[in-house]
Image (cartoon, rainbow, N blue to C red):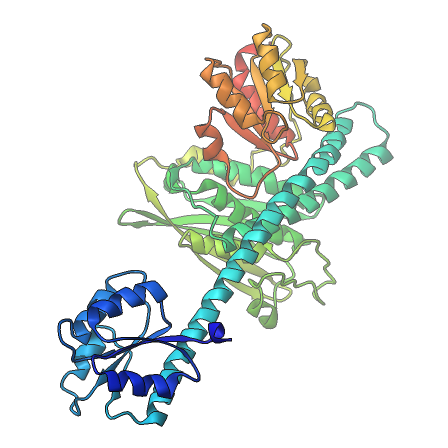
Length: 530
């Protein structure tokens, strides 16, 4: 029964004081008692009491010396100390408080005062302990949630890879009936929506757990904007909406920042603009202001859509908030996480995100993003004009020609049979020589048997020998051909990890046919038939 009580160490060189305090407190607390400073320090480290009552004036080490010693050791530094003093003046009180004492109890002892001061201090101790336990439980729950989402991400992405991959393979077939094309298009659209939901939840988890790292790397602004255009213009579909991009030709061409997260912010804002605009225009205007060590880039996304009323603006950036209402009866699919994630990403990049909106008139989202620069290269008039006049293809799949590579040989390594089927189907139009292996060990055996490959697609998670182990072993044996990881795990940013462990790149499942095309063109360019 005594084990559940708070413990108190009483230190006083006067035996009568020890006995009196012990008598006052024994019924409510577990008591330790010592008569000098040296033994007080030993006992404190041994028993780790919840509170120490420490006499100020003692022979040898006085109370001040003991307290300084206790505070210097991390094992005892957080134990609260109440000084015991027979002095009736406040001369020494400030000295004790300044080195860490929590309170004073004066002699002769008033039983009620002693009990109250001890009780009040231990209430604080117990509350702090409860808070620490709650924090630990929350951290454990958060870690459990992250692990669960990582596992679920992998498990969901594997069948998603099959659904989206087979859909894309079928869409490659010539002369399909129109109703079949329409049905496959709906499957593809729904699959992409589900993938967006998965990505939103994972991104939110990464941000909440502090695992979202912001890169500081030089990037090509023109390339970034081309990617944003290609991703977003298909969202217009057949709407009578004009997309306009205006960009200052003198803006730095190679800023320093996180291109991936900037694209994510712009994609989220443009996606919303296109969803809620049924006619008129969506404009992305990009300007900049010089700063001491770089520039302040300003992205304005302006639409003539349904707009947002005052009440909706208040909750616009709250998690899971949705604003499909009376304005035109708009119903939009999604999690309601896009804008909250955008706000959080902007904050991580030290950017400001603001919005102005009028119902039935439109909205304007502004991102002011500080970026460093390491050279004076500007975008230039030609690039700005090409972007401004919308000369880029609106859909990356339109005019997407797969270049034949009949002389190239590729090895696909994956333990899931349907993933091998999908990857082989995606590679079929390139007329490559495709070989397959079910795990890393089998891949190594094929190479050691004399098979040569110009490129290896290596699944990351496999039994017997995973992709990381296989790639490490191949590199140790002197294998130099490019190896690209295939991964269904998107809970953490993997690029750096893959590159540091012998891979030349990676593709996230579900496999994007455009990413595959980029990889093939990058590593097998010399094999393209002309």
